[in-house]
Image 1 (cartoon, rainbow, N blue to C red):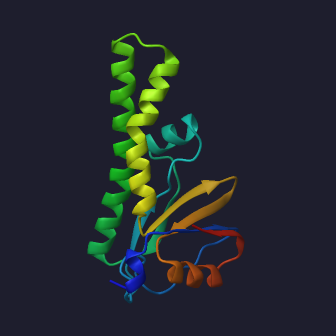
Image 2: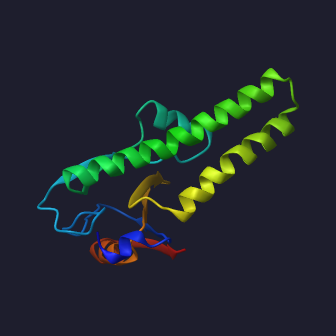
Image 3: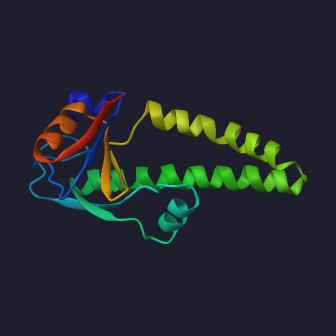
Length: 161
């Protein structure tokens, strides 16, 4: 692993047009030998985004990653989304079962998923992407990888956090 792969921040880049990646694994930072793995885009938008994700209608993109690194990345992306949906469904179902007001149910769901969201902010995945208004929005854990990626692409917007 590279020294930057354990950093606790993210870089978001919005790309217009085609996408090119540096010739190294997005997970470990080592040369990828042209190995790639396809990852699905993240849900974007409340209802429509989640439905598109559930039915496999979000875009896919090939990212450079070794076979094992790719498996780890795909598991992390799936775990993140399924975890939030399961927690929301359990909290919402419990609220409906106990006949609580919708506002109370919303507050319970928010309280239940907040720790998971905070965990994701504190421990970002190596790469995530979503299609946003016709552009692709990428989030990278490694800021050096993000800079190399940005240098290869037409960047519409960039943020560090």
